[in-house]
Image (cartoon, one colour):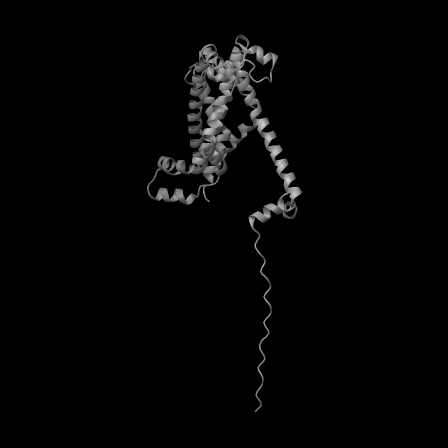
Length: 318
């Protein structure tokens, strides 16, 4: 019997595994300058110089007007008119800022503005959250009709309904009450924002329905679900709505001008244009600077919360 020689089995070579693309590789491939080009010292130098020039241009464009306003607010009227870009020929005049509070009555108008912003924020959140909760979570049989009706109001320019809104405020239906020269005349129209209602309802629709079913099984009613479950999950979108509402109320001009003809109740946006012709230029510029610095300082103080809320709006799961 002949012994057969056993030949080793031939093993096919394993193909090399392809390296998974990393996020930084994809980012480099999608940029204008490739990774190979960035290895050149000349290209890196040009990119650094271009980035620095762009940054300087952005700083001048964004901070330049604010700096000039500060310069005009702390200069005399003659210096501002004769040398618009001169840097304090006679020094800083901080008395313009103090005169703005007494001469222009800036403190009174600022108080009115804060009251209007606070009331618009409260009633705006109340309408947006309850309306969005009813459309997205409770879902009655007519929810779709209400949603379409709210969406349709976005296609109607605000100027068209201005006369009807004014007549409604002058003689409130059913109550026959005149709301002119009251903050209610500003709060109530500002709270009826169709955009905020739809924005909040879209966020509520993204919440898993299983959470609502579990809460109902545990015996939670509609109000308990809204207060203990929906609102804690809606902090990002509430931050976005709060920011939009406060900014809108702070800069609104036309409607407070019509609804608050009494000078003692007018906000900054209405009072400052009215007193411009009868106020010294330096004092008026100081009042304008204070009115601009307030929202800027508010944003810088809470920018992390604002940007986090805006970035996470619409997402409740990581």
